[in-house]
Length: 170
Image (cartoon, rainbow, N blue to C red):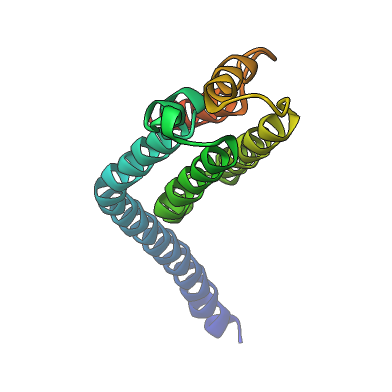
């Protein structure tokens, strides 16, 4: 019996050592492969993400009151027509860039949605608060000045969140 233990115990110790070493090597190899896969994916995804950030920046810039008003011939429009065109611009820009949400964080996307909702509500509210004898030029002037009066606009907040997230990529 003692003779059997002399061979069995060292064999078990060697077996356990081999198992530990093999487990460590296999785990290390798996981690290396995952790292290489992530690195390869990053090379492809990073340019796409950067384009998404660019497109979302353009979305925010194009839905600023000054930008939207500058693209309209306000002398030819009534206030309700102008309001509808502004809301249509917001909706079209939004629909065109909605797919970019998969490339940005949830917090940034929430701020972009908030900016969209607030500018649409602002456009509607300003149109409904104008005196009856106002014209589209008055409406445009009020839109462009009143939006920036309350400090940081939702567009500025969303744009800063976008910039911060991009800085985090590096």
